[in-house]
Image 1 (cartoon, one colour):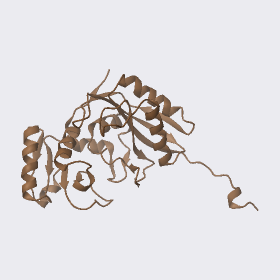
Image 2 (tube, rainbow, N blue to C red; image 1 turned 90 degrees about the vertical axis):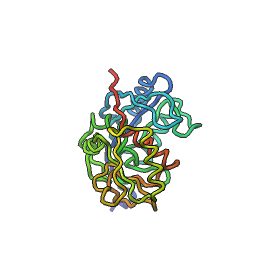
Image 3 (spheres, rainbow, N blue to C red; image 1 turned 30 degrees about the vertical axis):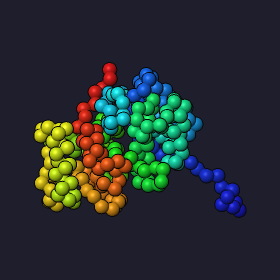
Length: 256
């Protein structure tokens, strides 16, 4: 009789999504190089790629416009292995990290992996920001619109449709009054009423808000799409909100 350790393991193939972006150097060529490098990995295969999109930079240190894309992959690697493969390609193509959210030659983000929800110190899947970023949603929806976000149980096409609402409605029911007023002043200074609509700061408003600004402890795993907790945003909340809105409102342009 064979011992358990003598039975060869069978590697199962998983699928997922990777988002790509960059704004230093010849970005389209670098993204093509990144896709080829991913596809040359012995345990990872790129199945389909989106068009390349020109998108606005998000954040004060982000630099010039970006080129973004997405790809569907299949792999026998575990999630950590896919992350390491992506980081190896970034390093190979000259990615440096001196400036947080600064310009970069190429950036590879693991968006989904086999419909799993993963939360470790180094990896969170689905990517926490993928539900509101048009520079992720538009390329993904070109090639994988019916893929389901496992945390929200909505397809990426449905997530994108939510963000297309104009004006984009936001609510901040749980923030204290002075912070509501300060945030509202900043939103009005940067966006028109046709772009963003601030709903009354009450609990019922969250039901019709596309984006809900919340404060408190870390959100539970069953958060609905649209909730942004102050404790999960890695920079001043007021600054982060403006970047979130820019990422949701931007209309990516397909590069022909």
